[in-house]
Length: 570
Image 1 (cartoon, rainbow, N blue to C red):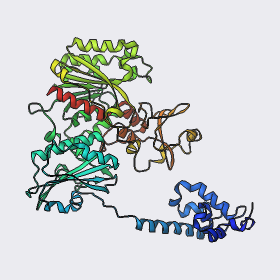
Image 2: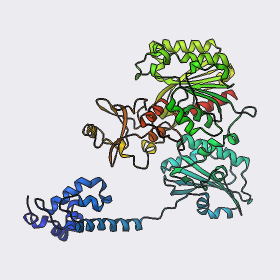
Image 3: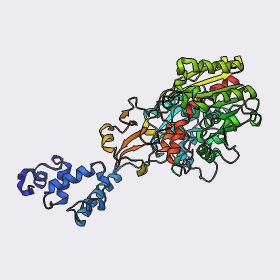
Image 4: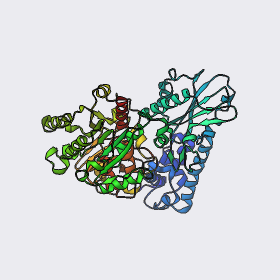
């Protein structure tokens, strides 16, 4: 190996620095000056190149132990390098502008202390990033607030451009009384509904008075979270809190909530969607024991537990009265993964007729059924003809449509499902329509966990790694391992989550980050199905959690359909 003195003088790192300045040197040459000398068999330049190559993706986070693991680097050299890195980072941090963190209503009010002096009504929006740091403050309107004049695009247009994770709205009352008017409440509801569709959290709506202020977030908040917008690493929003306070804001019929029956409930995705739309779930059933664990882990207290058992063994007489039957009846008999056996698939394929039995016995006003899109073409369309015939015999007017989660739920998952809706009343049927397409503003990165995943999800040391790394090259893409090859989902969204994605080598969704290649975590699968951030995962096998989310529904799509069903019935 050549020694440093064998290199022409002008190309030696120190001499080159003195002659041409630091910008003329490569990273390895700059590091060589810090190291000072090489080791046996390697000159200092080669040693530096080895270190840069090994740690290039994480060089600024090197530790003394990392350097001591390299042959020829002693404690003195390691300390010299790490001290240099620490000094640079210290100066950089001091130079960065201080972030305005908005963690409570008090913080938001402090940024707008001049509002209480205003003689006209102002509506101000704070645009925040994922850490709740202020990106921008903008005046949305000046003058009397009118729900018909405040258009959501004036708020959410800038939010999308700024890639804002959340917003806080502030509005002053020149009268000095911060109590919200009916107009304020209507604007409040309009904005959080728009935020839900656009994928931007509305953290708070604050009314500024002379002496006191009114925070919708603080009024809705409960427990011992001390009114922080972020608690235990979870960012709350008005939408999250309204799930538990729906009676105050949800539409009702004749003073009561419309009630749903949730069959093949799984972990409660349909229940969440309908309850977000203002319905009440009175009975849930599934036969999977692990699903019951997850379901009961999330819906406890005064909510009813999931009834475990075979639906064919449950008499209609023990089911409470309800208005809408819902059910994502088993899709495997009709899916590609289930080899499309359909009604010939013994028990699973025939569970549709249990729905027919309960509809006949209980005669609810409406139903929503969900299944894979292949149901529509299964057996050359004969399966759908049977389904329509059975439902129409009971007097229901039926309509169906295939909806893709990425087009109708603002969730970046390519998930096409067929939704079948029926009404006993012809007028309600005529008043119903499926929701319109909405823009996809959420990205894959929005659904990935901000904290690094556990090592068990990485493939770095596994036999497949060499094959995977040749094909997985982009950090904003979810790939899919398909037994023998890697498939890139070219639309920039996550491929369809399936029930067998946690079973080893098939349909496994994979992502790349600075640490390596890993599969999605169960929490990320929940995010790609639109489950709320406060949905809890029990301590059961990951394979079971993957199956549960693969079998579940996209909550925002269900919620939008539920809203339209409610409008048709009321």
